[in-house]
Length: 175
Image (cartoon, rainbow, N blue to C red; front, top):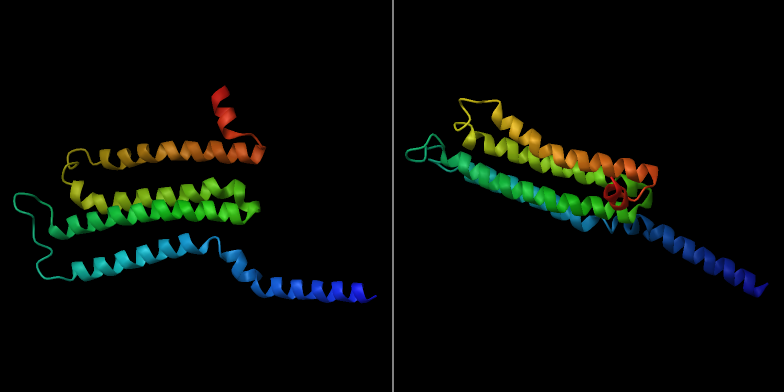
């Protein structure tokens, strides 16, 4: 009886300890990439707001129809899309590893971050390259649609194969 009460007390302590720390333990694997992603985006937004508030930033670059502000936005957008791509992909992988029930949906989450990064690039590069595509305005969006097509096909194949229980690499090699 002494052993069973000790076991129940010990078991009770283990349960209490795991309940006490389980919420933070559940989030701990995804916190580093999430914090990196959010901190990077917030810092870039603050930098952009500060730089775009400087006097004379809206002047044209000599001999071009491009403003200094649009070049700064392009530069910051390139960095932002890199942050979203890198840390968003890390976040999706961390979620897949930490929560096994979401493992098959990890490619979709990574795809959403890839498309977000591509959309950021589309938006920030439009003011800079828009004048080059003035005679063919349909070409600029078409280029980004073609770029987005490859990851779209890849993620659809991976998700379908994961849901069917097939190994993606083996399946692609046999086709």
